[in-house]
Length: 116
Length: 114
Image 1 (cartoon, each protein chain N blue to C red):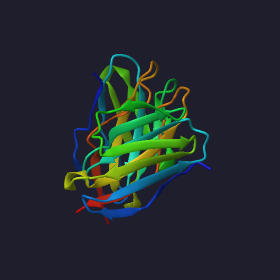
Image 2 (cartoon, chains in turn blue, purple):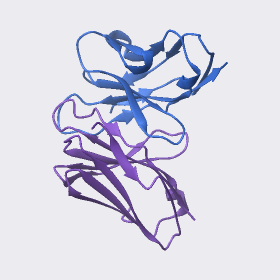
Image 3 (cartoon, rainbow over the protein chains, first blue to last red):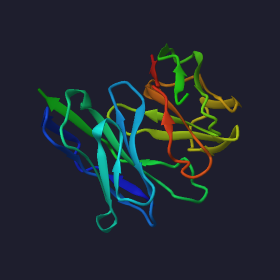
Image 4 (tube, rainbow over the protein chains, first blue to last red):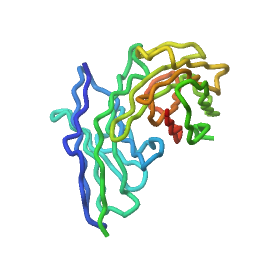
């Protein structure tokens, strides 16, 4: 069965500092990988996605993520965090085929706090 | 239009009430989803509709009744809910060709059951 692990429940950074949020997945084949962000009481917004090709993907709001097959990881990075980045971040994995459409598996989420 | 809308934003209901949540998208997506999200937890899939037909029911209690009247609309009818059903209910949509699991989420309905 597929699974996603986000090892850090809560991360605190200072505004302007760099950020890396970790995501490890377990899946039998090459999955589709996503990072979503959720502000309090809001829906999920897609930050970026990886399907195939270049393993370094760029997303919205200055975020990027790198797919490393050998480490089963898809870590999210941002070089300089802004106070508005404070939110909860979810890594998700989905099947790249078959009839299991819709079956996104989410990690438990990482809450990001940004200090001024 | 790349937006999924949900109404109402907030809903408070008693355990004997009947209410409905509404979701709408105009992206031409033929798959629509209902998720339930408790505080500080990831979304949990409840239902999936594809081509307006229910294709996945994740063993959701019958007090939740989904309906997809057309390709743009998705409803969730609520009846005889329990306080533990209080949560954020999220609607999402996606295309039905790969990558179909790129889902677009609405802002959610915050439901409180008294």
